[in-house]
Amino acid sequence: MNALLRLSEAIDWLNEKIGRVANILVLLCCAISAGNAMMRYAFSYSSNGFLEIQWYMFTIIVLFGASYTLRRNEHVRVEIFYVCLSDRGQYWLDLIGTLVFLIPTCLLMVYLSWPFFMQSYIENEWSGNAGGLLRWPIKFATPAAFALLALQGLSEIIKRMAAIAGVIKLDVHYERPTQ
Image (cartoon, rainbow, N blue to C red; front, side):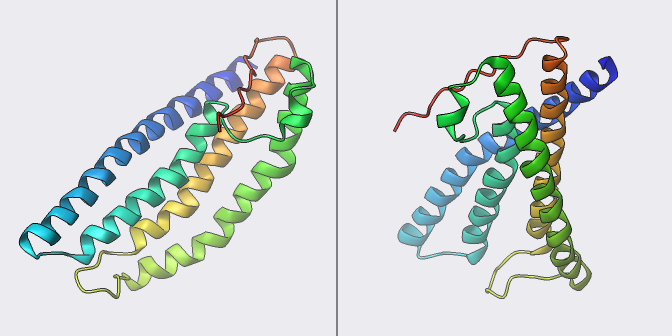
């Protein structure tokens, strides 16, 4: 179990670092958007590349932020069941949900999105817009992000199994998002 917990810690560390990059991209996306608007209105200059890089960054924020959010135990839940359970019941619900829904869905998404990335990579696909960007790097984001989400799911499975076995104590406190 200790080797699995070390693997879980490594996965958590990786997704924590990727989540921090996604957080920084939010600021960069805002700066590029403001800069693009200023260039367009002040200097009558614009580029599709500026718009596309914002789309790319937003894609990365959302896709790679998913594993970071799971790592932080902040994904949306069906709380009508979750809050009524004991800690042990929550461990089991998380474990079953991750095994039955999260991991298979992530693996299916990796499997289905990989050919789109490969075709784009082989063809060295570029945007059809003037001044547009290379497309295959952003198409790689989908299978990569779902693979990272599956890895974080594996980490959560390991932690839940260890908690059920009494090896570790987890804080599964879920706070409902303010609306």
